Length: 277
Image (cartoon, rainbow, N blue to C red):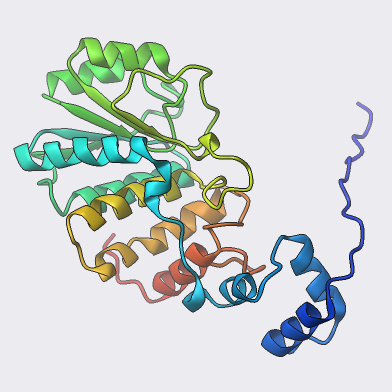
């Protein structure tokens, strides 16, 4: 087989304005003007953007309500499930992003729904079931009295299975970041960052980050304290980094390039975590 040659897309060199070069030098103690050029090429071109990029304490995350009506529909349905203590099942995935997303929803929803009695999770068998919703799995949940499935890191294109769940009397909320179907699936709500333009700060969320934004919106409505939400960020950081998504926009929690604010805070929490096994 012939060796594949990478097709690199190389940015042209640019000269940022002198004030920006001076600001980068002042805030980073890096005298090399190439640092300013790299930041400018990444779209960081104001003092506010520079501060938020370099220091998570100045970072202002995008609101979960950027998802619009879909987020409102998702939260309304979760509120109904909580108020009526309905049986909710988290349908996860078996990679690092899917597992951490499952854990975020388990901990986030577990503050309002009694684990095992009202809240459980379903992880497909990697070898025999593969990714996504399945009619066989839905049958199993239906016999257990499931009334609502919340997916994470999966489900956007499972149109047949979603229709089957509806037939079984089960509502579905999709949280995912994979390819969208040309038509909106018949779900209660679908939260998928691929619905945003590429430049939107939420456009490159991984599955765990989408699940986190859903919990963020629910916590806001239910007036939960900020530390309850922040305690989930170690899980979010693991899923984000492991899934190799583009670390820009809302994600600056921080990776080596300090591109991701969710990742920087999450790493700090992870290193000081006492999370149970």
